[in-house]
Image (cartoon, rainbow, N blue to C red; front, side, top):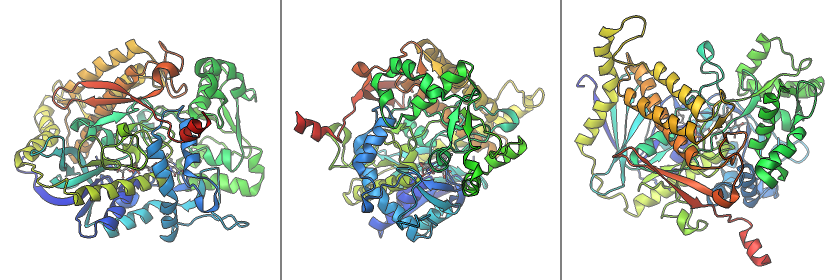
Length: 619
Ligand SMILES: Cc1cc2nc3c(=O)[nH]c(=O)nc-3n(C[C@H](O)[C@H](O)[C@H](O)COP(=O)(O)OP(=O)(O)OC[C@H]3O[C@@H](n4cnc5c(N)ncnc54)[C@H](O)[C@@H]3O)c2cc1C
C-alpha cells in the first residue's frame, strides 16, 4: 500500500463531479462563500465530462418568465403529469423559479443561443425547450467552475464518503484515487455536494459485445451519485422510477427536435397510428391518466412496446415528408452533429437517408436518473418557504446526512430539470451548503487517519487481488480466484435485465422475480470482494462496478416495495399490473443500514402543493 502516495486536502465545500450540477455548485459556492475553500473533483476532465460532454442542441428547461411564456407552477404541473403524479413539487418549483437566471448567465458567458427573428426571444423548440448551438456548452460551464474553485482535480474517482467521528450522521469529506498516477486522495471537507450524474449499464444494454458502450445514457455515468450516499446510510427516493427512452434505433439519436421542430411523427410497419390502438387497453391499466395532456412519456412508450409485442414493428419515424424541406433537412442532420454524431454514422452505415427512408425507432434499456423524465435519487430537504414539514430539515438540498448535499441526477423527486435545471440545483445546493458552514454546523469535525487508511486499503484491494490471483489464470482471463470488472458487470446486467424488468423480459417483473434478483445481487456482492484489477484503469472499472451493484440493489428493493404498475412503459409489475392510487399515491423512501447492509422501506406522502390552495379555496 505504501507504493500509493496519499495526498491530503482540507476544504469547506467539496463538489463531487464536475458535470452540469457540479459546475453550477462550484460557481455558486464562490458567490456566497467568498473566503471559503472550494474544491471540485471530477472523474474525467471537467471540460468534456458528464452527459453534456458532446454538447447539446437544446436547453430543455427554460420558463421564459420575463415574457410570461411559462411560470414555475406550469412546470410543476407538467412534471407531475409526466411522472404520473409522483414528484416533489417543492423541489420542482424551487428549481423552476430560478432556472431562467441560470440560462441568462449561459447567454452572457457566450453560449450561442438561437433567437426567434420575429420576436427577438430565445427560439423555442417546444413549450420548455430553447435551441442553442451547443457544441461548446460544457467547456463554457466548466470555465465558470474553474474560475470559481480554489482547485479542480481531474481524473480522480471518488469511491467513498468520509464520516465525522465526533458527531453521528455528519459528513466529513470523501476519498478517491487518481486514475492516471494511482495516488490516493483524501479530501476532508465541511460540506460535500454530490453531483456525480446518473447510472447507465446497470441493465443489459441492447448493444452488447463490440457495440457495448453504445447506449443512450453516458456510458461513464456509473451511479456514484447514488452509491456514495447509499453506502453512507442516506435515504433515497423513487429508485424504482427507472427511465426507458424511445430513440432512433442503434444510434440513440434524440427524437425531441424531430417531433417538436420538424413535426415528424411515428407509425407502425403498416403505416398506422398505433398509439390510438392501445388507448382502451392503457385506460384499463392507468385510468384517466391516459387522457392527460401531454401524454406521459411512459404511456407513449407503453403503446410502442405493446405494438411491437403484438407484431406491428418495426416502428418508424416518418421523416420523408419533413426532409423534403431543405431547411428542415439541415436542422435534422445538425441535430445529431451537435450532440449524437454516432446516429448520423449509423444511418450512413445502414444506407438510411431520412429523406427517402423512414428510420426505425426503438425503446432503450432502462437507466437510473434524477434529472430527465424520471426522478430517482436522494431524499433531500426542500426550501424553507415551500416545503411541508416532512420535506424540510434545515438546508435546501441537504440529504438525510448532515452537511451532505446533492444536485442534478443525484436528487430524487425533481424530474425534468435537464441541463439548465441541474446547474440551477447545483447553485441552490451550494448556497445552502455555505449557509450550513456560516451557521457553524460544521464545526469540530473529526475524521481520523484510521478511517482514511481503512478506505485506502479497500480502494486498492482489487489490485492486490489481481497480483496474487493472476498466477492462477488457467486460460485467457479465467481464474478460480478473481473476477474481472467486465465479468462482474455482465453478471450484474444479466441479473437486472432478467429479474428487474429489462429488455429481455420486455420490461416485465414481479415480486418473485425481484426476490430472486435480490438473492443473486447479494451473491454478486460477495463475489465483488474478489474483483481484480490489473491496472488503474481497471481499478476504476472495479469501483464503477461496485457503485453500479449497490445502486442496483436499491433499485430492486424499491421495485419490490411499490406493489403497482405506476409507469407502464418504464416497467411492469406483472403481479400488480394496474396503477393503484388508493394504496400507492405516495413516494417510496429507502435507507440502507451501513452496518448490516439491509434496506428498510417506507411510504411518504406526496404533497400536491401547486393548485392545492385553489382547490381549498374552491371547497
Ligand atoms: C443522451 C442525453 C441527452 C440529453 N439531452 C438534453 C438536452 O437536449 N437538453 C438538456 O437540457 N438536457 C439534456 N440532457 C440532460 C442533461 O444532460 C442532464 O440533466 C445533466 O447533465 C445532469 O447533470 P448532472 O451534473 O447531474 O450529471 P452530469 O452532467 O452527467 O455530470 C456528472 C459528473 O460526475 C462525474 N462523476 C461521476 N462519478 C464520479 C465519481 N465517482 N467521482 C468524481 N466524479 C464523478 C462525471 O464524470 C460527470 O462529469 C440529456 C441527457 C442525456 C444523457
